Length: 440
Length: 94
Image (cartoon, rainbow over all chains, first blue to last red; front, top):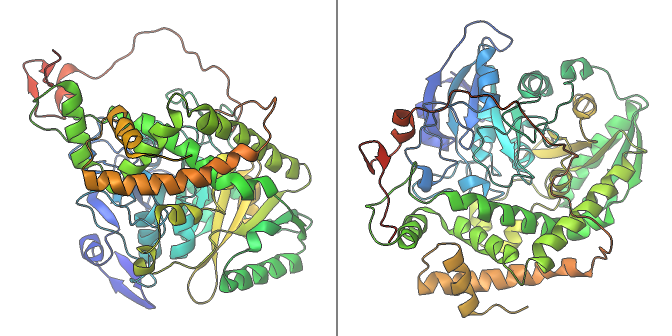
């Protein structure tokens, strides 16, 4: 395998690469067909997406040993096009983090491919790292709930595309938040993202929330230019680190030179309440979803002793990591009788207002743009000093499009440490975000 | 709102988590900080606003009521050690 490490090119196998970067939880090959649109491509798959017969744990000890009996639909679709699957990438346990530091018990944190002292971003951190390092034709299937595709894309310096909610089937995805989860491609080029998205998108009878709408030819949006396109620059998003802002504004100038019309727009409600609304909804959903992991039928188990409740509590407490427990506790609280109206139901109503805020802007603009993350990849040691709340606040730029289910793509900019340029489109307008991203 | 240790223990029981005293103290502090910030959404006016359960409009997804293949018993039992004959073995129900 050809690896780009620092500025140098190496021949290295994945095991060797992984000893240095921890980007894979499982390294295993699978190929079902020779010919197809992805013939010659290698695909890595985030650990939370099921690959038949390949241990799939969402990075959690509670699913240790679980080898799915079926492929996720997105996995089946890429295999049908002749690719080779090369393994399962590391992540925050169940997607619970923005830095891939909240890995499950017994798992290792992936390291930033540009500077190993820094984080990869999360939660699809292993995917971001592997895509940056592997020079051969390689695309990773990532997953985003509140920014988990574009955040590691920005910190690792690659392209990450999160599609419209429902555009790609969630069948076979180990869920985090059902109304938020999306599977999407992470690659070295916009072109590869467009190519893989076209293959994995589409209605799936096995996922009742997948959209029964025609799939555009995303590759036809490449090399179209941006002349005359109306781009809304979200003014609240400029409250970021100076180095990020400087690189972002340089790209804005270049888009203007290419003929795009850029105007400042505002998303006041989204920026003021987005984090709170996102976390209340996501944690409520995940506390329900994780209740199925109880030590019976699959995953971690113990000697079946004590009462049912004692057994469930024992297996869960032993195998969920610290952040997983915290999120289960917060989500359980937000749904509890007496608190539900003030938290979960209120958040679901404010979510409606946030969606309306975006939809109103898309009446006038083709796409919206912001930086992807407010900073460059921070150092692991610095992230360790953050409180849980400070961790959650890092998602300020990504929770909006995720709450509204809007397609968005992060493109790498910056000469030094990578910075992400985020392009957000209206529902099902993946073509337009690809068109703009291709010119960044 | 103010959380107290008793409420944290109650939530842990509902969530089927056994937490040590140390974990309870830490989670109580974290939850308190997070929930105080989350309470901010109370100030948003939502009179006559409907909840969004999904971010996009979805209809009912119905299918024909036809029998299809499902996992065999052997396949379903293949993931665990706690099994006997053709059954999963779990803790006592009574």
